[in-house]
Image 1 (cartoon, helix red, strand yellow):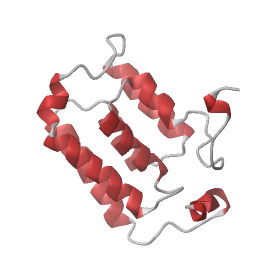
Image 2 (tube, one colour):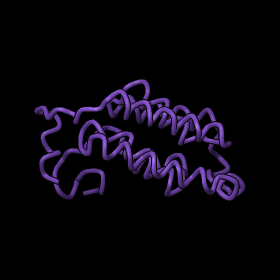
Image 3 (cartoon, one colour):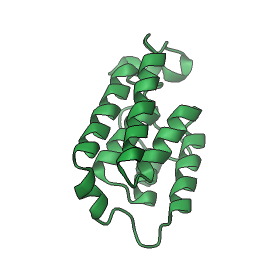
Image 4 (spheres, one colour):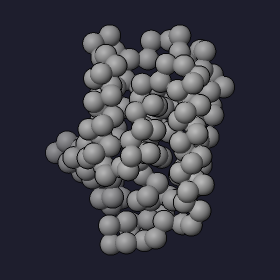
Length: 146
């Protein structure tokens, strides 16, 4: 059995395209991976706290933008179109809404401080537009577990 075929602690992350596969397929770094994880899961698990965590990671990336931009972030074989396609495929497989898809896309493929500012602004907009906790439904009842 592969790691993708099982999950520890429930089945709330089981999708056709799992987040760790997005991280591996795009070669994104730890901070981008954490930020995109929280953007992708906030409606299903942690609500606004997850969006605030995503924003916190983006702020850390912004503080270290020059260092991060100058290092080799992606495998040589991965081009920007491939990165964009991976972000779209992941977003569709995980039922992300347009603002979340755009945010994931920016974080997967950021190249400058403007991209990071746009990602931060989108997360802030999600927070402002969703002041109430995400209501629990049959599809996201696992949120009660944590």
